[in-house]
Length: 152
Image 1 (spheres, rainbow, N blue to C red):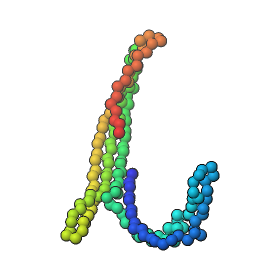
Image 2 (image 1 turned 180 degrees about the vertical axis):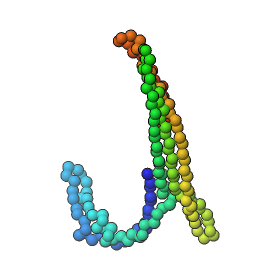
Image 3 (image 1 turned 90 degrees about the vertical axis):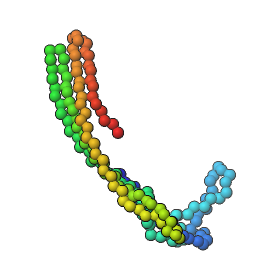
Image 4 (image 1 turned 60 degrees about the vertical axis):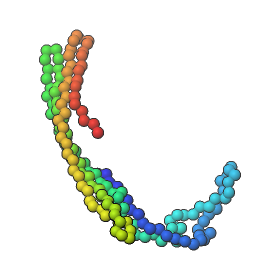
């Protein structure tokens, strides 16, 4: 299964950062001003107010796939040839989920309403194959093969 969930949160903060949270350093060999480094997690905890994360439904989705396969093969031979005949069966079912948004003006502001969108898709394929080997001489063989493939 593949999925993506997006969350966003409001962030606010103000003030001057206390210099005890920062470390100054120079880059040797380069003519640049002194640089400053601070631990983001420490600074964020001290100076920022982070709101509760809210799911952004416009960016969320899930896809699940069920794959089933099976095959049959028959070998055969004659006086100057050998070969096989086969068939591979493939069944794939895909389940998709996401949200569809509709935005409208309610008289004072834009309002977006989301509704769940679900879709299922299924396909089944029978993929035949044939392989033949002909012994033309004791040292010369002719090989031929044909098959139907399914790629994604």
